[in-house]
Image (tube, rainbow, N blue to C red):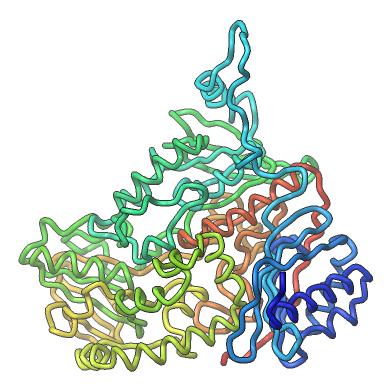
Length: 600
């Protein structure tokens, strides 16, 4: 079949790249990358890590360390190349010594600008899907046949007692369930423990009015997508039911009402001893790998203000808030001004409470309709589906952009919606509400990846603030609590019958400190963030989310978190890393050197 000129050019580049890899000619490989700007993003294929090599020197250092152990590498163009302006791009399939996956490349002026390698399977340990699916039954007469229900009962009875799991996941919401499903498909004995009774209870326990802010196209779990009649935005209770169903259908091993109380790692045996409390008994589990899938954040951060014990009304952290059914006519003060604070304020307003939010620092606000409008131009949309883009390909499209390039897209989007929604922002600012769009105009997308806080996806609260129906005290903090009032840092007092502390959560690594030790938490370091040097995200720049879905400073300890899309996509990368170790494969981990950078 005749190739288009741009497809022929891309195919020729891939052929030359493959030949240079085979020769282990690192200088020749590096010369194929744009000297002005280039990125190699790797997901477990070359580095056994999730890493971005930024610039020729970083790419050269990685290849000098990893190339020999990765060879032979085969590349095959998939489909036709496309071109936008001076950039030619396309997809390819790749094969290394140990695995197979999908890659993406962009060329500028005949040289590589970005390349992605995403490992998808290990040779000899392919997932039993499609033509490799199991038969399910042996069609011949057998006495005392062991049927599916017998197998399920035996596994439930023995795993964690007579048979130790190879991997223990602490946390049974979407992250833990997605990872356990991947592990199940790869044949890794895995047990989930969660302090709550059933899968999905973490969602069910949140305030009644909570809905997912991401549209449905972003939210699918591995293997079982939502049906095509599912609403665009999902209620938290509906999500809880889906997760419970998912755990059952995927045959995941889940111990509910089980609290993890401690863990220690034995260097000699390479296994953990994890203490849990279940059904009134203290049990010890001995997995080789421990995954903390306890959510994006750590434990609730409840501030300590003088006089809190003297307050005579109800007060709680936002994680404990249910609804405002009994708050009609009462003065309610919310400390905080991000997502949960706004959602709770709207719920209290709907119950006829008198609501005041205390906004201590500026908040990034983007209308949910605006985010939907931006998303509809991308792969996670009905337009994407109509173009033949499935969820896996949409994940890879997003992954093909290194974070530094994605910042440019986020800034462009932010510039546009600040123009489109100028009247909205003017009205909100006129109310006294403090706005920002992060230091480099990347808005919510930048803040989410850097510190996962400091923003509100507006689903109606901002309009109430602009109209004065929800009051805001901005640029002040709390200095003390009195029996019937909140004292602000400027000396003013707010009468209060109830207080909600929407003050966020501690860092994810705090779970490691609580369950294992402070030494281990310090060895791991900060989880989440890119190293942007902004508030809550100290440098240096790493270019990938710190300690997420990849090896940490503590052997055999992993962190799994993020939104539904991240839980879905990166659960595969984490599962492949653990499966490789279970099978005794060599997994030489490479981490590029971080560096200081200036945003922009």
